[in-house]
Every structure is written in structure tokens, then in C-alpha cells.
Length: 131
Length: 322
Image 1 (tube, one colour):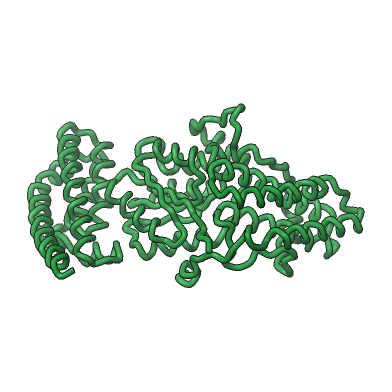
Image 2 (cartoon, chains in turn red, brown):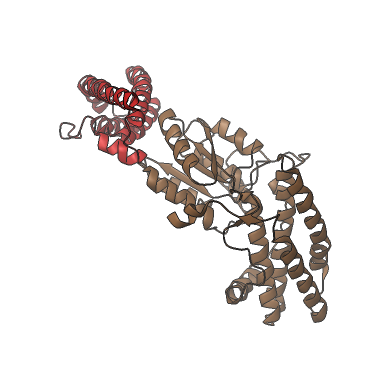
């Protein structure tokens, strides 16, 4: 299994490079979109994994992986990579280990998302007030 | 000043990614983006809008990105040409998928993650550099050979890119053409599409440029006294380019509002039709007749490639950026 500990939970420099825009408005918009969509994927993933629907797990992990790449959620991205591979090989053992890890990875990301969002929302408010 | 009005369709089943692609494509000078979250919606856009460039993910619920590509190249969409530039991307670079993409002449294959700067450059590049795409029949055969289930175009359809005449070419013809035609075409351009010029319609600009190129090739092989088989081959290509110009014009005209432009452009096309008919039937051994026809085509081109039909584009930055 990939070493997730060495990966960044959320690296906003990746997001700003991807979008070519480091404004608080863009960062808030993208992170909010990511958080909402990722939560849906997370619920569907857990359901599919519990039902051993390997093709569905592979599809969902694949989609989630590309979203993570866009915002710099490296840890979850590495997790998705492992889960996708395990699902494509119908490897239930690795997939079960993966799901256990998700209990740490996702809450950590969610907490970082919320704190970064809070910070950039404040920044945006300050900018709006100055304007 | 006119902008090019390029229609870009972005397709991805992940909302965040689709919005990202849409945002990037919309920011490219002269582009107007459409977005689709699944293959089915994308197919509807391709059927009803004249799409000039497609950016699609590969792995989606049916139809997948690859199936969309197969349908486009096989000319199965009424409003979209089969030879538009196609950029595909995926997080997984599977060998067989890449091989199939190459078979269907996908213009570019990108691996995720893609930055906005890179994607923007790629869009500009593929709008300015045209890849030679084979006739529809070639891709239809590929689809048939692969056993993919792709519906045939309805026989009674009023408009289809698949109805554009395609003359069968023997391998010997191709070899001759490759050896003589394309080389001589580089020597001199008989008809020239001015730099940074636009009709305001990307597809029309493409067809006009293509027509100029093919007539120039015909002119060059003819005046260079190349083998008759090479001259014939270039003549057919020039006629095909003209047919495509007529077809695309009719297609766009039905959906657009610029009445004065279309009135004028239609008049120019009506004047071109007898020349193309003559080009289609002329005996290339009658040297003087061919020269007279070429002169007429040159005169037509001079009169057409002027204001108000074409104008200088206001998207200078897209050239500079590239």
C-alpha cells in the first residue's frame, strides 16, 4: 500500500497552479465544489465497497482521484489510486485495508478543507470590504 | 472587428473537472464553451450544435469518450464535422485505449492532472494547426471491423457531414499524390488565406483555407507538368474541398443571424458553383482550358477574400500566446 503519511492532506499551491488563479474567490469556489462533490463520492464508494461492486469502486475512485489532483488533495489521491487498482484486480483484502485507512484520510481532509475555506472566506470578506 | 466564434465542447462526468475545463475553454480568445456531464448529453450537443473542438474524458458511462470519438470520425453527427480537432484525457494511460485513440486520429492525448495554462495552449495549438483526417468511410469501416455498435446515419436526414462526396482513391493514386502533390504544394500558394483573417465562423475559415490549399495543390501539380494521375488526384481533392465548403456553409447558415453576411456569402458561393462543376468535368489534357479555369478561380478568390466577407480577427493574443 502507498505510504499516505508522506503525502500532503491539502496543498493549495497545486490548486492555484492548476487554475492559474490564486484569488480567494476562486479558492473558495473550488474548495466548496470539491467538498460537496467528494462527500457524495465518499458515500457511494463506501456503499459500493461494502457490496463488493468492484467495477463501481474502480469508477468512483478514478473520478475522485482526478478531483483530488485538481485541488491538491495528495493523500486522498494516493488512496484513490490504491483503491482503484485493488478494485480492478478484484482484490478484496487490499480494498478492506483501504477502507479502514479512509476512516483517517477523509476526516483529516475534511477538517483541512473546512479550515482553509474559513480562512479564505474571511480573506474574501476583507477584500470585499476594501472594495 | 470579428472574433472567430469557436465552439468548444468539454465532456467530463466529474462536475468539478467539467467546470474547470469549461472555465479554461471559455477564457481562450474567440472560444465559446459548452459542457456536458455525460456522453449522452455530449452526443446531443454534437448533433445539434456545430462543434469545432472536442475535449473529452475517456472513462465515462456509455457512451464513453472513445465511443464519442468513433461516432464523430464516422460522420454520425448532423451538425458537427467529422474532422474536428479532438483532445482526449484520462488519469489512466492504458495502452489499448491510446492505441484506439491513435487509430481514430485523436489530435492529442493528455494525462491528468492538466493545468489551465497547458490546456489553454493545447486548445490554441489545435485550432491553428490542422491534422489531416481521413474520409468518413475509412472510420466507418474501422468501426465495423471493431464490431462496435454505432448506429448508421439515417438515410432521410437532411444534413449530414457523411453526405459529403468522397471519391474512392486507389493506393497508387495516394502514392503519386504523396510523392508529387504535397511537395509541390509547398513551393507556392496559388490561393492564400490571409493571416489573422476570419469570416466570424471558425468552420468557414477552415473550409476556405482548405479549399485554397487544395486548389493551390492542383495548380502546382498542373503547372509543374506532373503525372496525370497526380493532377487527377489533386483535382478530386479540390472538388471535395469545395463540396465541403458548400455543405458547411449551408449547415451554419441555417442557424445564424448575420443576414447581410450570408446574403453576400451565398452570392459568392453561387458564383463558385459553376467553376467547381467545370473543375469536376474538365479534361486535364486541355491545357489552355484548365489555365482559364484556374484564372477564374483565382479571380473568384480575390473578390471573395475581402471586406466585408472577411475581416481581421480581434484575437491577436491567441497567436501571440502560442
